[in-house]
Length: 319
Image (cartoon, rainbow, N blue to C red):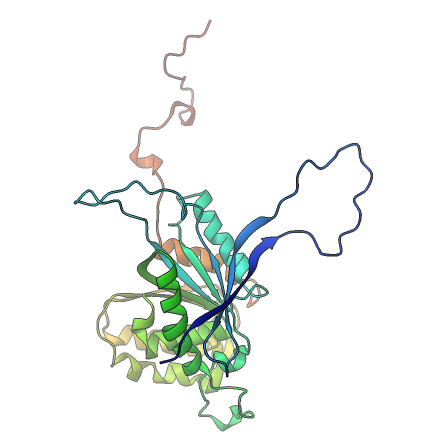
């Protein structure tokens, strides 16, 4: 068994000024204090001396370090456990910042979706890490260019998940999200290793790859599934062509599978999104479905006076 070592904590990921900042202009206003805005923490996990370390970036909700006073039936204090959103292409220079922003939004406004931990998994050679070996000879490329998805999945299962679940207070809810080739990888992960995550978010998945082989294999792969509850949120922009055709074939196979507990939500965004615009809003929408935390419904409550035309405040006594 490989020994996993944390090589180093790289740094606190911050939003700040450029390192070559210009001198501040002369002004009557003096800076009283300047401090960094901390977004998360970055780790490098050393798997073996022969492999490059794995970079993961972690965002924790604002409430994570606050004292939790809840108790269980035996009067023992309980610490809150959080769902985890595993982000493929989650490097510091990839999608970690924008998706962590959605995590921060949950801390600011609890009525959008539940708070969650973000774990960004950096891809270093994403064409290799996010694709399986091709069957169609038209996709042949030099060794090491394509075909590393199984190996990448193994690192997630055997290295990243144990580290995160041993280091942080996580619930049983594991969500995975990614776009384009990462969406292809997530779709394949659901079909081939469905127990790895509980919830799958695939944004504009590259189902064109290898002449739509994954879509063509969907029916057979689903026959190996049990009927455990899983959620798939999948959406597509206006890419069209074999990308949309692959998605249509995959959805049809899921519909015919008879797996009632594979809950699928497809959102068609062909009319209002492009491949390069779809990601952020689609992830927000997916989280509202997977981690719902609805706020008060005014329709179910007595309306406050200011929402009623012509009403007055209680005990109002105009002079």
